[in-house]
Image (cartoon, one colour):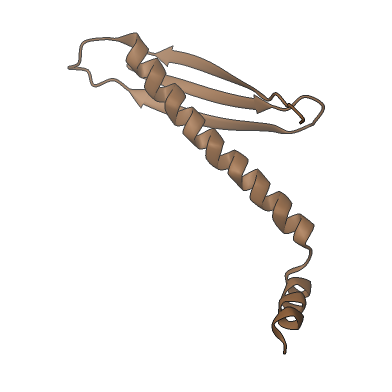
Length: 97
């Protein structure tokens, strides 16, 4: 069994009623670095609860990061599969009687 560890750091910045978050994934031994971003805005009539803005912005940054990591994986698969015309030939040969 192989165990791997990837690190995600979340950076938060508060500016008035707005909280911005950046989630940064780094993979040891690789040049892979993926960023996700999130934003939360407090309604001015709401009572200030800083944790909620942090949590929402961080959660949104992690959601964005997850989509971007998925895109990296899909891009890798497409690259490994080779040109589309070669894949079509392979599929056609496989389906031919």
